[in-house]
Length: 114
Picture 1 (cartoon, rainbow, N blue to C red):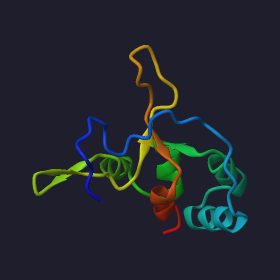
Picture 2 (cartoon, rainbow, N blue to C red):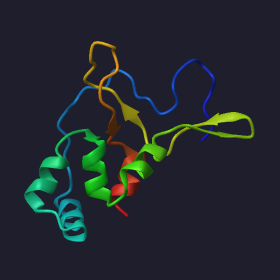
Picture 3 (cartoon, rainbow, N blue to C red):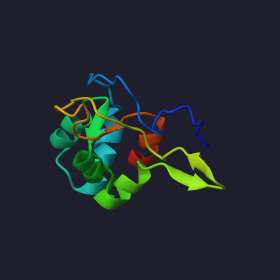
Picture 4 (cartoon, rainbow, N blue to C red):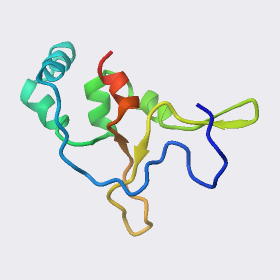
């Protein structure tokens, strides 16, 4: 997906609040079984609408550097291309940024269901 050059960072979902999110118990069981994670821990990691980078790595089995790459905009044909997963900074520090989280949306769900 090509991003517009409107001054916004591609893939950054601004003003994201941490909220509870429902998850199909079958998905929790599938991830827990495939990744060898305790189902209760899996359920707790899937509780919210965002993931820490490490949680996303644990749930998908992907390496952290691969996840960072998925959350980074790219360039193709001289144009900015949207990242494969969206991210947010819901807990700003004194610089206004804070730790990076993966947004739980249709883009990240693709990697969870693999």
